[in-house]
Length: 393
Ligand code: CU
Image (cartoon, rainbow, N blue to C red; front, side):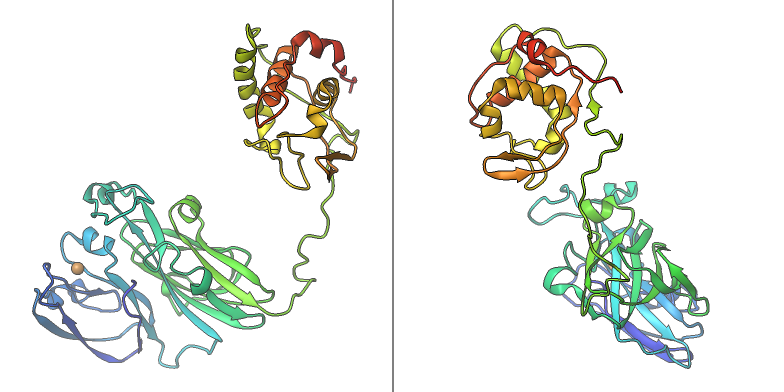
């Protein structure tokens, strides 16, 4: 998937033979968008299992065209990947490029949810609702990544023949980190546009995009309706090798501490209604888990492991377990010094949290009683006693 790429010239007289294997159960046909004639050849090519049909056409218009099966129910035949593309080159041909690739997007409708294992029957209900489980390039998730990625070298020119088989979705075709030097929108070779970021490809339509690689790297090809790329499979890769050009693209030059107010530690907190007092240590731990999820988890992570070189771990932290009062002062007063936790150095900024005594007691007690830490309890009275009072801004 997709079907074979057919390449002809404007003015060619083409004889199509469509064979339907005797083991098949369904009739099939072909509608070529490159054909001028009823159904694009659909009725003339309708072929029962064990039969073979022939028709011919003359390629009057140059361009990149989709072809597909048009047997009822059409959405089911297309939705099973019965499509491909036919390029009708203009009489003079296309200019030479270093690489030409064929990519075709399609949406797929399975009874099982995305990722469910085993043979998946086609869902007519989902295709009618236009709610695909998969949106992919060239027929499967991961068809064009890793060892199967498209390749090029710095300085080379790439031409992508991109089609959208549908049956339903329009593609917002985009290559992350690569501007298209030239696009022939809708596969129309008489209309080139230049310097394009994303080109729309309708269902049953195509585009030709061209660009020259200026720097090396892995370039991610997506449908920029981005949920489809990162959750449903519409993602391919173009791997480019060759020398760096630091003027065109420097890569990361600095990683600095960002202090928005310009005065070091800022105050972060929730405001709002203070939490009711916890009656027991167990209740304190339970409430603390919620405070942690809302305030601390983004940096220190759900497993308390932090992020290497950025956010210190809380799990089995020598800094934390060693000194309860220091922990209260750190949370209420923030930090902007280098510190060493479990032998690793960190240099960042932790905001001063303007949470209530209760919230801070709860979250510290949660942390002290999770991930193998020392099991201490921190009370609101202790937080009140050792709290670092907020500086006036
Ligand atoms: Cu078919």
